[in-house]
Length: 454
Image (tube, rainbow, N blue to C red; front, side, top):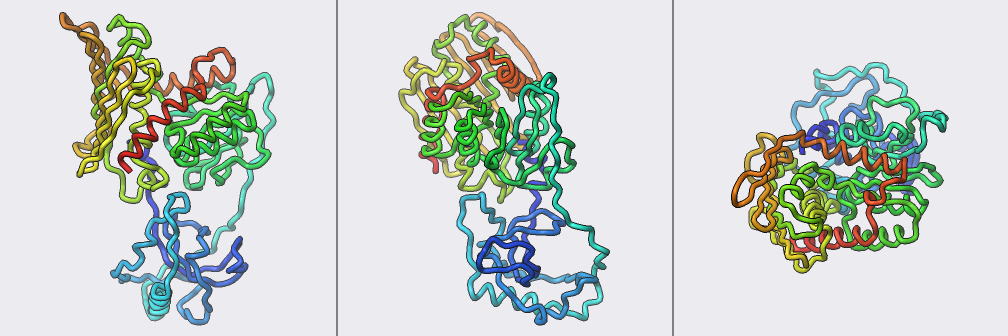
């Protein structure tokens, strides 16, 4: 959660109406150099150019707007309070929501606002000599085969990728391309990396590995492209958001020689080994899992709230669902159910054929003092292990406390990416990658639970 909230540039967006000149157009409705009035519903601060949907613009005549100047911008202290723009506010083409059209009433309202700007206003902002706007394409360096054994593309360059993924990769994997739709995330850029604002792989792009950590609904399509080209894929959660994506991932994986690595870091947690040792049980013995998870409420227009991002079961809850299945050696699911309460808490119950039970509660109600919090109890026979916030562990049986431990809760991320990248380089750990059967089992359960709370 803190990782997401620290992406200040990504979370801070602006809604604007304005007048501008068409620089490029893929729409038949507009041509280059035409003056248009436009709505920009969701853009970063201080950008020289804005990409807008054709439904969010209409042509105008510059002579009708006498206040337009190349020397200054008029400072208006008053603005329209009617909030007629509600249906456009924060819309994104990646959200899964349809774009609203500019109705005649809104067209007239925009004209009224922009034509009423007072030309006699004394306060204004001087426009200095503009900097030259240019597109930079970085050149790729040819690396020595002896030092770089695999090249990779990264999809999604947010704070998670910068702080968790990239620092922990095997040095013999070289990121040669970074795909990130938000240019504000690309600063400062690095030499020898090709930056691309397209969210998907370009045709004929050549890498050995795809690291996928972008918008949730893009994960499956990127993975499918990689698998079809026999490129190993390392996929951050969620693995997919629809049943159709699941079917296509399975088909691509069945026909590919590439490997698929699911990034559920709790599989790599040190406490997993502690628990098996302390409980004196074998892999596959029933381990019941009781978890209460608090996630800090996200901003109203955060992308986790988009329809394309689905419910909290897919966007966050998948972590604990996968962990439960992993600890039980992926025993087949017997029953599953989820319920959303009136205050939007989600309660999930799953039972497995080996008699293990999952009780998972996801909540946004409570203290946000330290961000995301989790309390987990693992139970098997007369043994119980308690895990707080991923770093405190206490195991006990009916007679005594068996073990107490405290660790850095981020070490599982480091171990995960180090182990996965080492496996990609050495091809020596067949247990790390996911088979299509395992992907089908985990994702089918998560998708079915999501349907209960939509």
